[in-house]
Image (cartoon, rainbow, N blue to C red; front, side):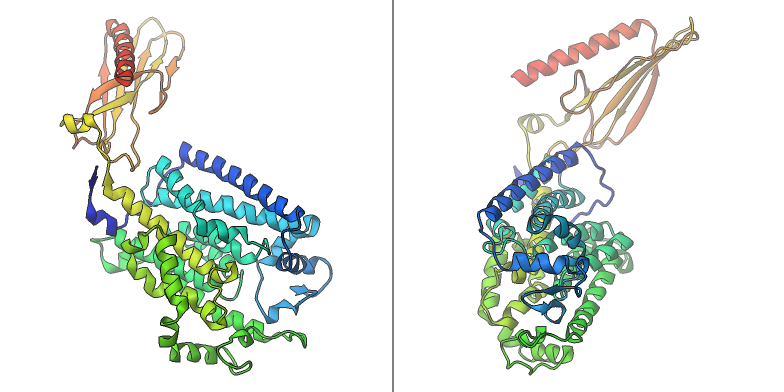
Length: 483
């Protein structure tokens, strides 16, 4: 094994990665995850393990379907005065017929979707399919993520759905797709008034990774314009959502969202401008607080140490602790406080795993022993009859492979033999794949070889010869595998 240290601190985004069977495997595992998480959540629900906020969320979600004021709950009254939970409104379509289990299913679906989109993001970052599945699974079963979606006592908060939405946003931003990125960003922002912080973190990471990938290009060509637009949209959304919240009239027993800032007396902060002034003037106290110290430890442990490969993300990432510091409740790990940090952890960890996959080179004995690598080419034979006059050709296509780094995608090979005559029309095809195929023909390719195509007319005597060589290759490979 060799490590190319420079690759650890660079990025490579392949926006044109194609779907293959590993994506199907990831989808199957994601569906299994949904079923498993939903079963556990449902079991806890029927054992009376959840209370309070789960049922408040049900009331808020289906308020508009029951003829009541939008986002109204029996406990808090007009919730818009406290939080802008607009994303709960479409969830009312499942909360109305199914109640609390409907929201628990939405949470379970988000966990499975997080796994699938994490695997897709890793594929975009150049990780081979099988290792993308493993790395995404490692993040999925990490203790912080499990505790996050488990949500003890409450069972559900709409903020828990945010990391999954942000992974979808991350995927589109890495591909630099403008319209899907903007639409997904708006969905993320609709979750809550501070969800814009999570969207901004995703935009920053995507913008930096695309910039690193485009080394050597002119600065204007290295910019991720969709990421810049999402970042600007997130910055504008925060004051807009706070203004919507402040325009509402809360019941006598409730309060405005700004009144929950416990570092000052209630009513001291008169508006969004006063809040920003307070944060800037008290920035040294914020950055030196226990919340930041706890957050730094969480970032290191939660990212499996990969934050050390991108330490500059800690600078903007400190914004994910802002709400936890303002409310002064020492509850950074509570899901409604922790979800911006969890979003940043997903992005940083996936980027770090991709860098490690590119940097680590796995060598086999055969590759160390032979200067010229051996590649195995699947054969497809086509036999066509079009009369009494036969014509035959062998088409072989070979592509350049990466013979040493098994963590990166390996291209497949193909070959086809065609026989044509002047009477009749009969086809016979044997299609073979890179793994689990029926026949393999061994060829020698140089390390510098690129894709090439050959067309070779062959006499009829070579028809049996080709099949004999193919059978011999199968025997050779079977013995080689057994040894």
